[in-house]
Structures are given as C-alpha cells and as structure tokens.
Image (cartoon, rainbow, N blue to C red; front, side, top):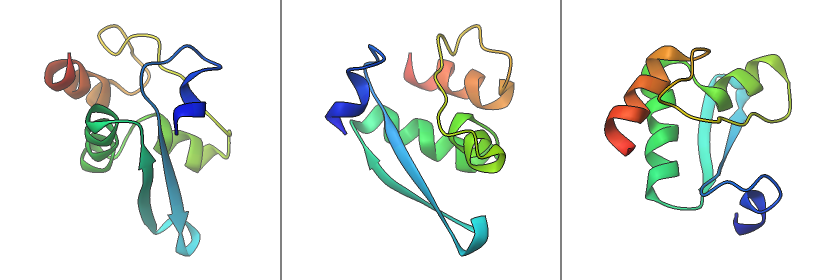
Length: 84
C-alpha cells in the first residue's frame, strides 16, 4: 500500500475489491486506520470514491479535500467530521 500514496502525494490510500459481481465488497488493504475508517464510511453511506470507481469502472479516484468535496457529500462530510 505504501507505493499507492507516492505517485499522487497522498497521505493515505486503500484498495477495495468487489466480489460476486459487486454484491460483496472487501476492504483489501489500507495504509492506516484513517483510510480504513474512510472506507468503512463508504460502506455505511453507500457513496464515496471507491464505490463510484467500482460502479463506473473508472480505475481510480483522488480526493483533494473532503471538507469542500461535493461529489459524494454524505461520505465527505462524515470523513471531514470524523477524521480531520
């Protein structure tokens, strides 16, 4: 996971895997507990960057600032409140 953060100058990263045609989601790896919690919040809210990438088959997503992000508002506001 450490290699995931270097190219984009991120401080944390995670990988989610979809199984059974997307019906099951596994948090496969995270760089730290904040990335793990951010992923868990995606599963709880049903929205977020990893879920969007998985649904859209986009490949990757990068979040600049969860305090100002508008794309996944339910998720980003939870992340900003809990992890900042």
